[in-house]
Length: 92
Image (cartoon, rainbow, N blue to C red; front, side, top):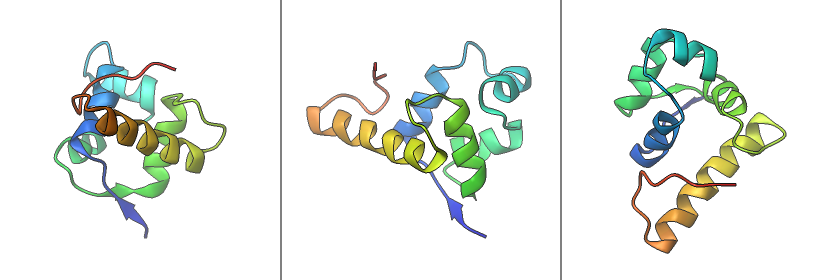
């Protein structure tokens, strides 16, 4: 089983796309449960396939889940190089 984690900055990016942190919005926006959300929030690992699905649904501007994960990581890296705060949102 392939497990992955996300950084606090990546979590804040995902959080900023939610109008409210409820089980309804987590499922509608990302297709995940509250349990998965809490794991991501706490820096605990989740299945890569779950994160890939979530990022695909998050519409991070990618055509496939693997590309979505790379795009997500690249945006955070670019923010850090520019000196932007970890939770700064990025626009496409």
